[in-house]
Image (cartoon, rainbow, N blue to C red; front, side, top):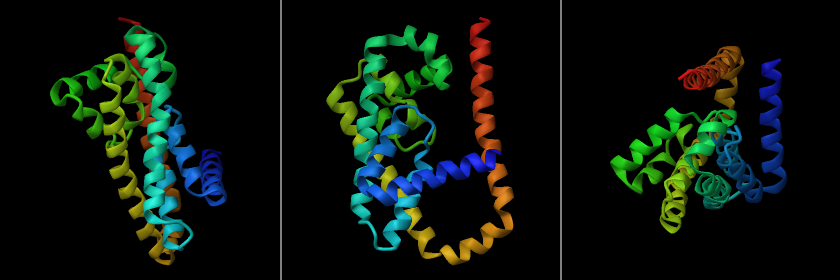
Length: 209
């Protein structure tokens, strides 16, 4: 059943990008930056695959991804800005954002300053919810969104390039996938399950404090 769900989500992502091009990439990446679990690791490589087929420009795909990240970060930033830390300590659990996540983000900002926002945009998982702490900490808007764009642009270029290389070697990969598809899907599900389990455990522990 879970395999079917994943397949449907991937097919939907592919359909959106195929039908709308860079605009679709922008929308999907904005959704991810709004803390909805739609990983860029599934969006951008497919865009790269279309680039390898000559159906989309390399730079257009990467820039669309970065712009989408910025657009999606705007509502998250302002939720943190106006809602404050107490709001997310109370409701963050519903989007798998725990106090520990906020504390970790605070430490990164204390250690690296504004550059933490740049670095976080190139880290899996963390990049998705960093806009909340940025808003809570009242990060300077121009600096935050500029660094968000630059960091997201680098991330987008890397993943689109990965998709291009995958597209160029698709025939070889199909052979590998046909042999190990169950193993690959199971591994992805286990990693996702561990992430969710860890956060649910953190939420329960924080509620019992």
